[in-house]
Image 1 (tube, helix red, strand yellow):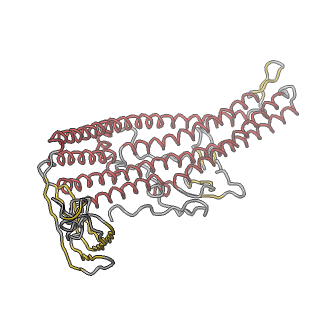
Image 2: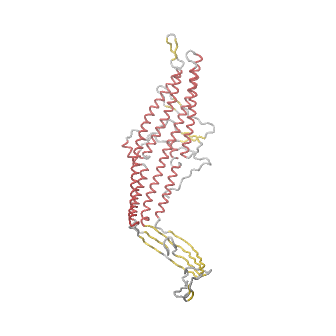
Length: 511
């Protein structure tokens, strides 16, 4: 890559670091990474699953008024004394424990053998009409909130992708700068070594040791920069769920600057955009609407009845409404008939004489107040994030220009020191060097620092752009792209077989 030319100097060509044998290259550009961030991260899949659960609850709420269809079968066998289950005479007349024909005698229990079988179907329902009316309305708002949470998750994944992507750029750029400085350090060492042999009275041997120490230090930094590049690659492949063994090679230059939002735009212009577009606010507003529906539900509960549909007994007992019934004595089931038993009730209820209903209304009002307070808190958070992001962006924009000037100056200073090592001037009868090796060593050390600062501030500028874009809710129609990302590039999205596959997530919430 070509760095900005210093004043009066040539353009510096900084070669991109090459991979080593056995590395798995993963070429990718920013536009492709952002597209993959829309669906592959697990945070998005988790939000989609939550919306799927909310939709299932909404679908259940819409059919609360439909009775349950039940089928049952029961067999009963009785042997021995007991109650008159069969409807016959249980105590023969004139017999009891005191003998026959005793006053008030009713006899003694008979041994009975009874079979009893019933099988049938029924429609069973116990439902408060307030639940059937208002619960679907509240569940719909809960589903809306979860759908907005999906967009929130996608926004978070997009920001995290941008952060990790520019971190890869930063460390690869620092590694490229480190390799360049190592190469220049070797040139410097050769130049000082040559001067020591030719003009030992001008360059002491200690200057060679100083240059060697600097070269060893620069080589150590280059190894660390290479490590950081691979660590950042692993972070990006984790976010996008790609092959973790790959080394990411961004297709853009490492000093690329993307301007999505003009840093000079005022907060009075930006904050209203964020308060309009942030999905967190829309989700919280849906929760407030759900709380208002539940307040109406509790207010209407004492006025609207509950409906009970069952069989010939109360809920919790037998619920058969249309059945085949058979009975008989001994081992016989010889008396068969069809029977129907339908019970329908309409019940009005005041919980705890109405005091319980008042408590429920108060509870729902408290939930609505809590949801409203959370909305105000999110609004304050959005305004704060926009303010902080704008401050970071403006700072990064200024520091990028300063770092670029510092890098240009560092390049010029070192090149002049390196070229002037052999130049001397006479002071009376003594020759002195115009540029000493110590100055060249120090200039090279400052050059490595300038490289690191430059690529770091460029990455911070790009991240700050996306942080502010995220704080505004990614309002594409309200933002002018001064330098949008390039088009999509083909990317190998396969993963090793020993890792969980990346599917399409749960079914769509609109199904």
